[in-house]
Amino acid sequence: DVKVTQSSRYLVKRTGEKVFLECVQDMDHENMFWYRQDPGLGLRLIYFSYDVKMKEKGDIPEGYSVSREKKERFSLILESASTNQTSMYLCASTPSGVSGANVLTFGAGSRLTVL
Amino acid sequence: GQNIDQPTEMTATEGAIVQINCTYQTSGFNGLFWYQQHAGEAPTFLSYNVLDGLEEKGRFSSFLSRSKGYSYLLLKELQMKDSASYLCAVMDSNYQLIWGAGTKLIIKP
Image (tube, rainbow over all chains, first blue to last red; front, side, top):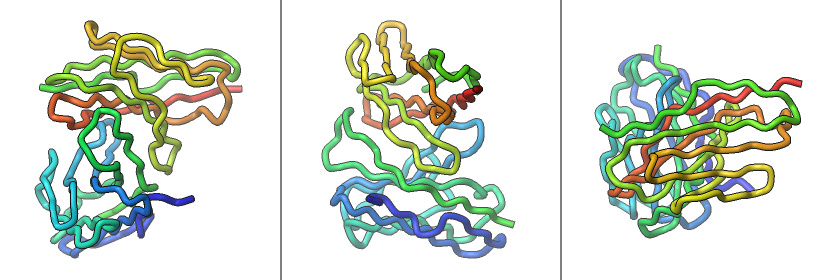
């Protein structure tokens, strides 16, 4: 019954390493999102995508990039990890269209620690 | 700026009722969402309000007053499994979601 799968639940990386976080959804959703979740803060949007090969910056894109080569897969890339990128990363998807009623389906999250 | 406020933590007793408040100031309004997030798990959708009033869904109800920028989530007949964080989010005029920091609800026997 898994609908949004994030490949890694826990990662530990060193400063300066390149990090890939993978997200796959099996609901044929057009829209996919990457958020980070930190204690005491609301979810913050990093990047989102409304279609294959398409990407839009969210509120905090600095230090991140994304790739969407296939509809079902949305990857988050940290080109050179830094300690302030230690966080929980959540992937989510919604069906097509911009609507207030679009409900996000989230993955279980990837907890990244950068040493 | 845009802002969502909700209490950081609340404690309630099994079998009781609890109300979790959410106030917001956003650029426009296209609906308010409540999500539940158990520790270490994905947030899951609970409710969506776009018109004023109360929406009831089993033990959970959500209320919205757009004129007051206010919503609450009401949980009745609390069960231990309701221990979780409850996230309030508002969709603004650009259909972007603004999230509160979440309310951690602790249920005691």
